[in-house]
Length: 319
Ligand SMILES: Cc1cc2nc3c(=O)[nH]c(=O)nc-3n(C[C@H](O)[C@H](O)[C@H](O)COP(=O)(O)OP(=O)(O)OC[C@H]3O[C@@H](n4cnc5c(N)ncnc54)[C@H](O)[C@@H]3O)c2cc1C
Ligand code: SF4
Image (cartoon, rainbow, N blue to C red; front, side, top):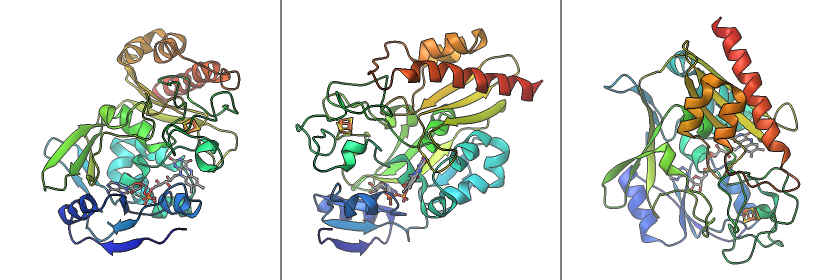
């Protein structure tokens, strides 16, 4: 590991200002992703700003009937919160499908949204990877690509976003709140928060350098049956090959988002509209224009079947 400076911030604005002053500075929250990447030389921040003491660790009701989840709320606490379990069970289920109990005790809301891809070539510093080293190439294209993306891909990168929580937040229309180095704040719809790889897969969100996530808000609860199904190679402690976040309303309408298929949580308005017609219609809409490789073409069928199973369970639950 390369030497780095470490300091604690005294307020969110102070954290953002401190990070903006130093090129290559990074925030550290639970450290469950960042420290792993630093140990293998994939991330080499020269300066770490610890945001753990910033009192961003509460879950509060908002004036419009939703909730504001502090950036430092741990995944365990969020999944167990009574309001989340009652009003946003999709989020609770997605969180509990991720990582392990020990990791969830450390992992934070903001850190989870910003975790890096699990593409094996990104982790192997002997391999070309445009995300790790822009312009070096992509070892996954033409390499082993079973886990990789099938929609929204580019010629530069076919990595997926690994978060389960973010897929639920996409279905729930979450908003990310930030503070910038000059103290100004902004709200970013989760749909616009993560980016597609394009020619700059090293850029993964719309955050500017030094911009700190302070909270994620959820709008008022939408009800319905809410399910999260994760298909993976092992029953636990594995990332999604494909995951389905579904909210099904009594009239057959609803919302669906996918994990494991793109560089960001994947949702399409025409897929939501197609839900009453069934899993095939919705998955066709979700995967329109899919570009698969020899290794990951199976994901197209897997999405359709995972969505069909999730829909069937939701209908049974609501009957
Ligand atoms: C073995 C293993 C298995 C896992 N399995 C799963 C899984 O199945 N599903 C899943 O979803 N996840 C899984 N994870 C990932 C885990 O959920 C993430 O590592 C965790 O959520 C990251 O949160 P953190 O607080 O530790 O982030 P950190 O490691 O502290 O930070 C991650 C990134 O976020 C940035 N950051 C942190 N806080 C802020 C902030 N407030 N504002 C701006 N930037 C910030 C950091 O600079 C860094 O770039 C797994 C991890 C491991 C190690
Ligand atoms: S898919 Fe993306 S992360 Fe993986 S090797 Fe290619 S550029 Fe790197």
